Length: 152
Image (cartoon, rainbow, N blue to C red; front, side):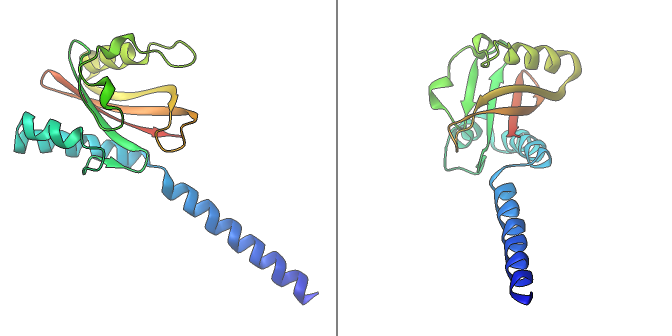
């Protein structure tokens, strides 16, 4: 009887540890919001050129696990993207998720009307490469929109 209890206890304990480890692999909503605020402050302190270089650095301080900052001009043109350098210089408004949702248009509209918020869509996770549900937090600062998303 004791050996069954020990096995069950070990199984339960390992389940808890694996769940905690999986959660640590993903950024949280609070971390995404904090990263956006940190990016805005970094640009104000260090200037746009230095900030964009840091935001575009996949090993820089604005990429953490599956979190990364991207920045777009008010016209939708990406000027920084921590996970996909090929998007820099592109009009992001043409992007659609797997359900054909124009999520960038939604972000741009909400940023211009409310200044900040969250938008849900589906997008490839840069860590797992799988299409996953994602929520992106964004804030408008001046003529730029700063964003960072979480995978659910």
